[in-house]
Image (cartoon, rainbow, N blue to C red):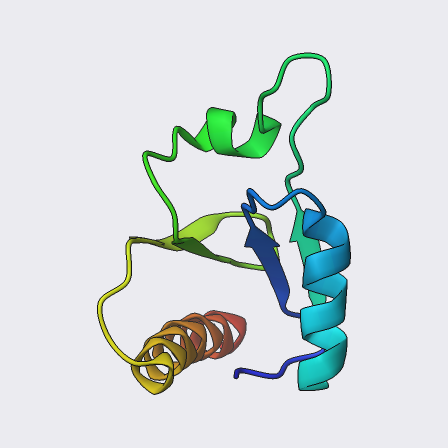
Length: 105
């Protein structure tokens, strides 16, 4: 799994205890990144972030830069965990390289 102390991952969970499930998974896997949860609003039964991004399905992954801009959006999954990690690593490396080139100007 990609490990970057500044990495923020957003997940959309449908289990009865999504926050506890995510916390246990991150702890068990010894990951060191933060997880931002979009839990369902008890009154409206909506996931505010999912609704605002108009996500049609899960899994969905976003790579968001340090300015809060969505740089990559991936919907669905077809492949191995390693392939998914390699793909996200490549996207993050592209953003970092772009930032380095911009800061040299």
